[in-house]
Amino acid sequence: MKKIDIVVPCYNEEEVLNVFYRETSLIVDAIEGYSFSFILVDDGSHDKTLHEMKELAKAHANVNYISFSRNFGKEAAMLAGLRYSSGDYVIIMDADLQHPPAMIPDMLKGIEEGYDCSAARRTSRKGEAPVRSFFSNLFYKLSNSLTNNRLPQDAVDYRIMTRQMVDSILTLTEVERFSRGIFNWVGYDTKWYAYENVERTLGQTKWKFSSLLKYAIDGITSFSVKPLRMVSGLGFFISAISFLYILITLIQTLVFGIDVPGYVTTLCAVLFLGGIIEVSIGILGEYIAHIYLEAKDRPVYIVKQTSIDNSKE
Ligand code: UDP
Ligand code: MG
Image (cartoon, helix red, strand yellow):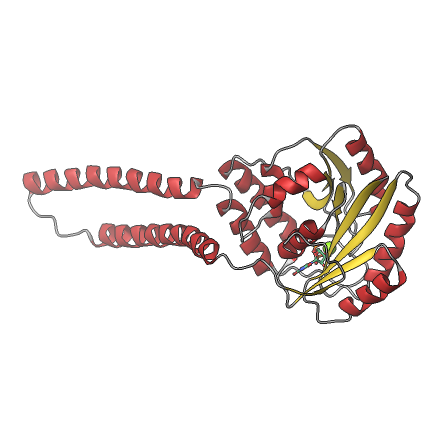
């Protein structure tokens, strides 16, 4: 019998965890030929999430938990779950039931057909704040034009992967992780399953606009150096124009003598170039930040307690 691990990152999910377990179990228990187990990852929750996990683990032999020493973020929680997993297949899904467990039997069929991965994508974003959808679309457009890693629009972190694919993902040792990019970068054949967005009914979203923005910038700078090239390109372009302008001004001065007005031109040039220089330094800074964080090589998360002892760490 094939073993499937379900990795669930959880941050302050006390309200949903039990419902999640019940609903998901109902679905997976009906699937024949596989044994399912849960790896619940407590990402430093401040509520009773860990307590709920322990209760579930006590009551059900197929439930395990990993608990972090503080909140390290969903990326860290997913990584921990993958590292601790040992199943032939691994499912990653959210705890808030926005990733419908009812899709598991279908997604499993994709794997049985020979795909390495079955992944979900949302066909609609109904119920989502329009500003969030707008920036999300903008991110996908930007990311796809700036990186070679073409992220399928509206892909979510809900997928089943084979052991081989999970192991490949784990060979990527970067500290600043952008999983959607990594899942795509490792390659393998993915079958996509569309579903209608499900609104969160219990608990609330953990994402703030600032964290989404950071996520988007990391997503692009982790997979592409094109922004850097664009900065040098812009530099060359502006230098060329400036050179022409210098030539014209020089000739004008030599032929017609010194022309006093020029206040506006000077001001425009100074402000325009100042702005471009600031932006360029900012872009450089993003990459330096990546180098800095990777060079420190700090662990992505710290496990405080867990019910699993077969970790490969
Ligand atoms: N999550 C986490 N750590 C965090 C933020 C979120 O483990 O720092 C988990 C959260 O418990 C949930 C999943 O990641 O299971 C998705 O989070 P959320 O529902 O808040 O995001 P959204 O669905 O709004 O994108
Ligand atoms: Mg959610």
